[in-house]
Length: 428
Image (cartoon, rainbow, N blue to C red; front, side, top):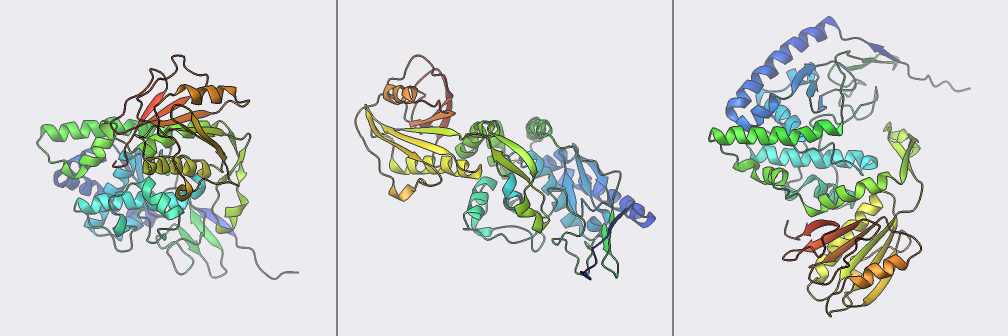
């Protein structure tokens, strides 16, 4: 018989001391918000869209947002300097403004990596804007200014080693989880306590009621536009935010992210959510597992008439394949064609696409008909055809019975009135 005693977990409401700390912290952060309105009018204006709610709850040891509210632990906030409090407030605002939680689609099993990537993107922006970034916060200086998607892929591929602490919380925690900062079995900020026998008491605050939805994040584009217009009318310099504002308002989002947003709904239709994935339970990370119901068939067609270069092709195909692998791996059919079909190869998890081994075949004129004729003859209808081209050629007049995305390289044109178009530019 084992003598190991099972840890007991009980729950408690915030104490009177906690309630007093809430009042102090709320007053301080409300004052900080007004100062931010003067010092950084754009961020301060956006901050007014978020209700500040102090909570003493084990699920929010630091701070978090659901797009309408910022929940924060008063004990955590009261340990910070005024500069650091301003940074945390702006940090939460940029998570909303940059739609980080909506952009996580397709990366749920790599949640921790995505957390590091989005904190890097925000902290990089804030440091350039004059905010004080706490020591030990996530910031990969070599990749400063890179998007969360780029940093995520670098982490996942092993080119960046995850290091540093997140400034806030991006999900619910488990009482007594090992990642908490206390060295005595507590979380360090009065939400989780452990007694001499190892039993845990976790606090639960009735004020902690986050409600996240994609609709909330979509509203933030309009909020960003309104704040920018208000600041422009007052002559406020927005140059520090210009790149991000351009991405939001001018549809200059990176083509890789646009491509991911096109493809993600197709994956969702072929998968279903199951109970928690046991591979992560030992780390006390409870992520839903996913199961493939049918194999997803993707076709990439490459216009090899001469204007489409090898580097563009390698980057484009590699990006599509990375997206496929992030969802578990699917069949990828790669067709090269100028006036005629030059190559037709199928790649999958057992036969992966290797960019360095890829060679363009062709170099004649351009005709889009052979690819669609070949696909139409196949027994299995593809989920989507991605056609990389400069667009100068003859395309079928009749739209096929499957989605088509034209990846048009810089200087090219959309070859047909049907299908979706993504502008592919290796410089953006």
